[in-house]
Length: 111
Length: 116
Image (cartoon, rainbow over all chains, first blue to last red; front, side, top):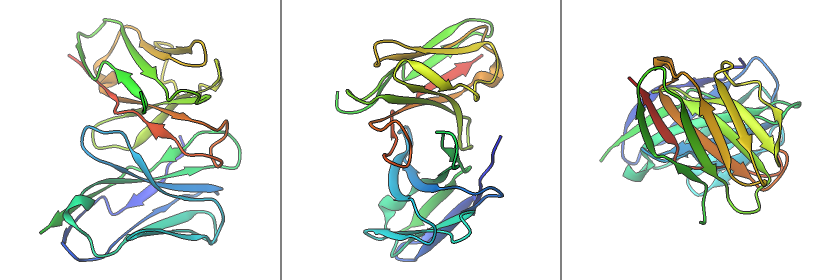
């Protein structure tokens, strides 16, 4: 099926550092979403992007919808211990009504 | 309840047995989705309901998998003759909007299935 390439697979960073992760696809998407999943929980939506070029912030999180509509990135500034978890990108193509998910980025923070 | 509720939270079964997984969406949410998450992997789409009908069931892996939704509320995912490769967390999500892009998906905590 349709794949999203998400990188990096995992990150182990120092508290206070900034984090960047991204997703790319060979297909065009008209919606990009970023989710965070804590252990034993379902994913929770962080940021939703609906227009090419859109840059949206949610507190220390910033995400952009790539201008080609084939990529998106998520930045986390000044990381804190509670940022640990798995971050997933998800995209929706123009037709259909399902989200395609990336494989996730595991974030660990050293305090 | 306030969120999407799934049961059982954990299920261990023997290969060849049938299992039923249940999802109670947020009240009033018309759209309902089932996803599968294998260990260390992303979410894999299985099926989408709008009301009681399933416009897209393209992600169901085989004819051993089926799902139904009654009363525009509860949904049941059934796996017949389970195999070890069916072991995964099965996540349900609901949405107040009929189409993604106008609303977000709210996920339950998942049902962890282990097939011995």
